[in-house]
Length: 303
Image (cartoon, rainbow, N blue to C red; front, side, top):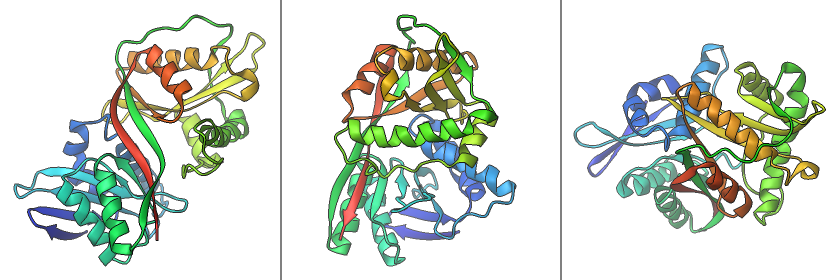
């Protein structure tokens, strides 16, 4: 672990998820919905490390503490595809700008950065200033939490768990979801900067019983809903995908409602992200009882 000070704050870089969780667990648990991405990836990484999977030399985890040694912010850089953007949770403005300077001093190339606003914007602007570049918005997202579930009108068929025989179809639909999300938001397909999970990750979700299909009355899959296993009592739904030929029939609303009901019955709080540029998904989730929690952004830094 390495640490640096910026005025009244201390920024500590960890090279492994275990050390990060030891330091940041209380901070993450105090606001588990906002922390959901970092927390779920930290525990997933810890599990992989225990299984012998080595982390990338590029990866780091960050904990921000104040003068009283209280954790006031966190971040990570664990992305597996270009531009390998760091992900920032809320932290003091001073820490956001200080992190940018530290990354610049470390010689890290940062061409994209994701996370909570305004932290991510402040960090990106300082990185761009230091590199003589500019900040562009790849896309803006909004984190929602389910309050009181509102069941949609019933449709034929029902929900079933994916099995290991479904890996190929689930992987195909995960990739299609990301491409279609870009297109529906008015972006070029593949430009959103999101990572496509491979068959091994999809298989892991299937084995953990966190991928479901909605099947029609003939038993054919017409929709996919996935979720991350609960961390600090919060389960994050996504992706949610319906092939174009099956849209407009209520599959997604019913699947998300039933998955949410099951997760809540198991004692989890349920959250999900929407793309702010996609009015269709925002309308669907609002009708189910999801309410906005905080805004986030995926930003690009052009030099």
